[in-house]
Image: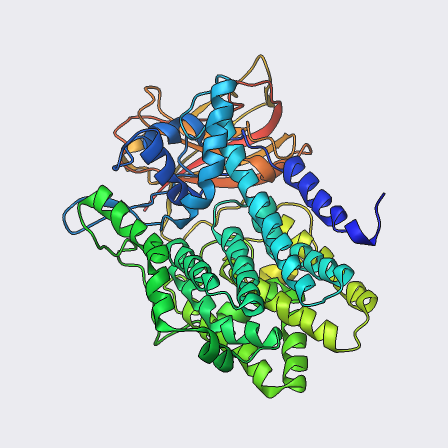
Length: 558
């Protein structure tokens, strides 16, 4: 029987259903181990399966499990001064992945599936890890609130609002390539452990909190800034941090529990294993420019602004700040100051957008502190939770839609302009790809396919259009009108030679619909010694059906 005590089941069940109904763990184009996650995860197969510090197995796994056109390839190895390579990603996430890695290996062994680290059990296991740590983090955070006498119904309403109304949704449902759900979990544990220390005054919690901070550092070094929230958490727990430390903290405690932070030696050990160097800067030329932060863009830009892409978070953040300052200038400053420093540091990174995706993903790590602030003002002010919920509902709807739009490339994460944002506002259909011909491109030739072509279980290839004078071709632009089942990842546009030495493909995926639509795709032609290329549609040797009403190929040089 569902009642107020277990109402939390509804949002978690809905998330669970969406998680498994949307994802296809076995699709080459939709793997959980993708993007940056390839670097975070690679430590595990390298150590436990291949015993290979050079990651030479990666190319074979890319060929076996990922798109053959290389569109999902991730180069996470950086060359060091001695000519050897290290994994640029810090190894902390591998510790969180590890239980699921071993469980996946067990399932692979039982089901007689290759235990190579990238087969279906491993892909699904890493995806499930995101759900597990998010749920666990939410549960730990709810324990913290219950300990300081917050209403259970208010706790779960606010947690639900945050999960469905912020970019957490995007990174738990669509994109498992980043570290932020795990850091969200660590932040929840950090808050809970701090409260336990305050409550018990037991010095063992000093060691526990030290271990958490060490995990922050080896997962994402900038998250050591979490320590800045310690005075705020103490104040929320009605404790003066200076008085508490005078009475309950001694230098000998740090010495006693210092072995716990030996977690910090994991990166140097792995650097030594990979490159024979104890200390390296694994990011090479990537770094911070503190003299020129992109602060305003980081917060408000259409391109990747944190608050613009998560308007509900903006309302919650500013409302919390207003009422905290109204209650006490001190507590308001203790809440705001860490965010000023954190956003300044993060916006100073050389790539302040942090790639594509939904909004400023790096801020997900710090959401638990905003949740703490918001619940505290609900507790101490005469807010009606039903009014808050009514305000949140339309913004949750907007957030879910925009997550979908970015996933379907209606919006281009990290590249959206103000014009594109409003042009496609509330739009559901994916924009057909279109090529803009540059002024310096010179048209060499144009060929057209005549008659309607189809692919199905009997015809895996459309009729090919072949090129001439390849030695001077720099660009091939394909104009076509094509229809197929929306989202079918088997339909590809291919440019290749007859010997298989040159091959490039474009997967239509979410760009294609059953009703044929016009689009254009560009291929760069480089490092090819072949005399001719052929352009055609291929259904990956499946029974996927497509209709090609028209296809024209134009050949350019410059």
